[in-house]
Image (cartoon, rainbow, N blue to C red):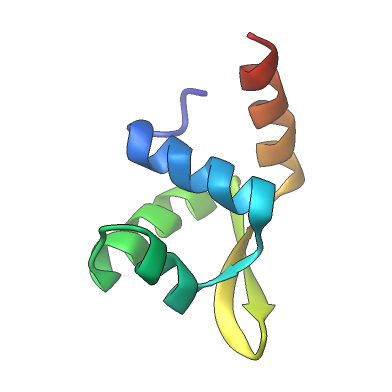
Length: 78
């Protein structure tokens, strides 16, 4: 998956795909990232078409896109 810059980005994407969508607050509690780093990482994934904003329990959050689901499936098959 060329659009993820590192293992942390791929792990975040996989987590959101498998168990999401997640509110930003939940992601902050699960990952050792400050808020600006998390939003920066999510912005990169959004720009790549892999994440989309979502409302989760009345809070801002993220969900994977169909493109992300297809690309992650290819990674799992490899």
